[in-house]
Image (tube, rainbow, N blue to C red):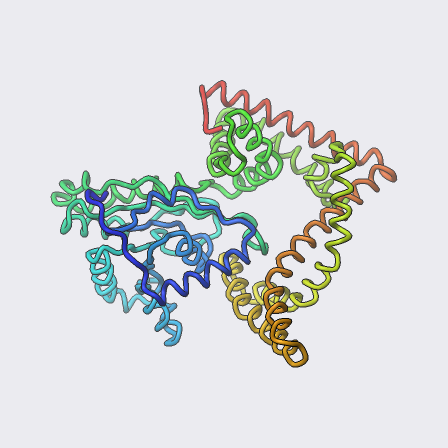
Length: 465
């Protein structure tokens, strides 16, 4: 950890322009991008960010947008094969890393990679590395490689007390959806100086020890689920129960909803599932069967869980009137936004489904395709309007394109929820017993989760809930 406070470094203009461009598209692409503890990243001095890697190039865009400093990323050398892309990446400060699985004959070039990394850190810059070595879709931090620890210890050995190592966790919710959520969480700095004496005596053991510390630090910033079957259960419990937990925490601790740490809640669910699987696996299996039965019934009648949860909570007449008026008044805006944004919306989605061989590539392809198709179609539409309209009308039309696109999408989501509401109402009129069964099954699951939470908190004498 740095022992001195370095002066803040200013971004170079090209990087600042690209970062501003990326921030706009991230705002447009994601419904919500939350950043936790960005203040832990020093505004100046040598910093090494150690980041998990769930979403290919999207990870770098998100972290770069969250950090108010230039970030020099280490990235696979395969990205540099294209001369145009390679030149752009180098201009942005990206350093190529040569991996054995890509080309074992070029591993010796990593000497240059380490040298470039040390030069950047020695100049008081910020470097970001993905210690897992590759992207993956698993809901946990994979076993990380030793490169980050070797860089940190070698640099700290030459420049004692000047390096800050920060673990970073990226969590994407609904990674295949447009307007999803993403969380960037910066962990407490990992001290490097205590490992120096051991590094000078036994380098391999010291590197392994610091690697363990970095691994643990990264795992604390993400929801770390060890097995895929556990991940499915945790995801199902989160979908049914996390909002209730968040509301309970908010009310009991006097916090605003935005202040509730959702990662901590999710980690608490993971810990509780693991605890029960070791001590009462039959209870876990019974709960899983209940959830599966309920979800199958939802799918059969095409009903959303949130509507089953809230169908009895009849809104006040004034609120229903307001929502109805907004739906009527908003329809022309939706129709306009859908008409001018339909093709740039559906083309990137089609391209991602067609060309994303891995789940980790889906969001990156869709994002990059959107960056091309939206401006292209907006420019074409603006040019067509300019052929017959005044400059003022053309400018207003151009400004309306991204705004109407976001409004149209939100309206579409609301319309989908309304259609599901109608299905619930129809179930009540035509299939009354089915709706009653849905409500009863959901209530039974929530009651069991509440009992399990009480038992877990009592047995563990406090928990991450």
